Amino acid sequence: MKKSLPLTPVAGNGLLDRRLFLQSGLVLGAAQLVAGNAKAAAARPEWMSVPGEPFTLYGQPAQFEEEVVRYPAPNRVLRNNGASWTPLHRLEGMITPNGLHYERHHNGVPQIDPAQHRLLVHGLVRQPAFFSIDNLLRYPMRSQICFVECGGNSNAGWNKNPSRAEAGYFHGLVSCSEWTGVPLSTVLSEVGIDKKAKWLIADGADAFAMNISVPIEKAMDDAILALYQNGERLRPENGYPLRLILPGWEGVLNVKWLRALKAVEKPIMARNETARYTELLPSGEARMFTFTMEAKSLITSPSGGMVLKQGPGLYQVTGLAWSGRGRIKQVDVSADGGKTWAPAELQDPVLPKAFTRFRIPWQWDGSPAVLKSRAVDETGYVQPEREQLIADRGRQGFYHYNAIVTWGVDEYGEVTHVYDTEQKQSGTDVSIDADWD
Ligand SMILES: Nc1nc2c(c(=O)[nH]1)N[C@H]1C(S)=C(S)[C@@H](COP(=O)(O)O)O[C@H]1N2
Ligand SMILES: [Mo]
Image 1: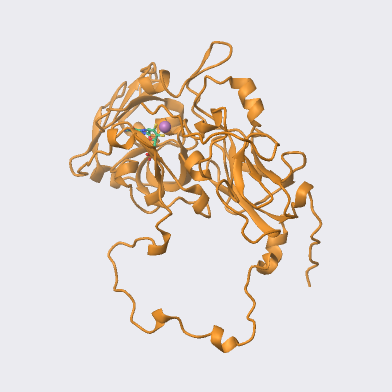
Image 2: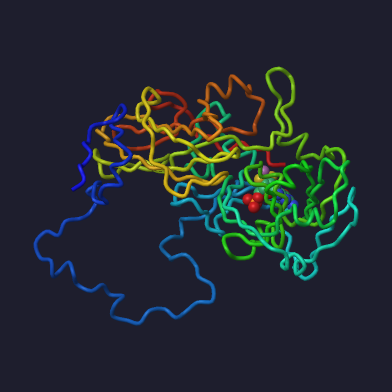
């Protein structure tokens, strides 16, 4: 017999040992006990009396899951320049379903016929070449599970008042998929890169004609010319038929609808690497070419807009952590606004540059509580508190917000986003004040 763990808190305000969940699935006491007649409880539901629906060619979510959708940025969609958020607070595990991957386009989704699409590799190369999709499909492929995150994700965190958006509609400009395709290094060695080349200019085939500069080292390291997303061909909105995947690097560099790569000596200084995705620091200097997305974590349940309906008792606190520098080493959770912390259980697999699911049991006593999570990655980088991030970066930034997220729980079990350890703050609803131009 295993010795069972005591329900003694391991940190303030009722956080319990993370191993408790590994002991028994019934620890939350969530099962409904059969009171009285077990035969009535075993009665067949109505859908057992008629044959089911026929087969479908392509499956859709259950009709009862219609609320699990992306959230489009208000007013921006009509102009084809905007974003839509992944509902992270309604998902589990570490993989984002393809239909819910966040979207960010600057001029809509081009409808590309794969038979007519070509990738041109040129510039400082021995032999410029075209690659059709059929050509690329013949190369040996590689898969990597990694996140893609927009540098503008979570930017409502810079606002003076805490956003009232639900967790995913605030932090969901990040998604995690298994990307499969041809290692970019394979194609580059085929065309022969000149030693003078230090950058690749990547071009997209959308009406925005998006372009951006990618350092050669990253291109030769783990970059993928992705053709598949979670086992099926890319979705149009995520770059069909070909996109660049740079694991752990800012979303904007992951050029969709990829049509050209030009080897050059210097970055092109495109709009999206100068006027955008760059921030003015308090020193007056511009923080540019940041590339790697820093470690971040987010409690997805309970989170903003949810209610602890069962009243005081045992709850599962769960969320996601990720880092562009590598693996997540630890996620600490606090229920007392950061005074004390306890390590959460990290769910396998814990992969570099991928979502990592964490869980910890929490005994809520019915009084106000303040939940936080803090990610530490394998380089030792610790996710900063909001005050710290603002002290380091000032408020002119707009991009690259990765501070600790705080959820306040009131005595009714209602969960809201708060900024500091005060349980509740007044403040008007803040829309995501994003300049997506
Ligand atoms: N061709 C092209 N590539 C693009 C963009 C674009 O507008 N056009 N948007 C970029 C930005 S800013 C981000 S955050 C990611 C979004 O990828 P997704 O829409 O697949 O989530 O794609 C990047 N690649
Ligand atoms: Mo982005």
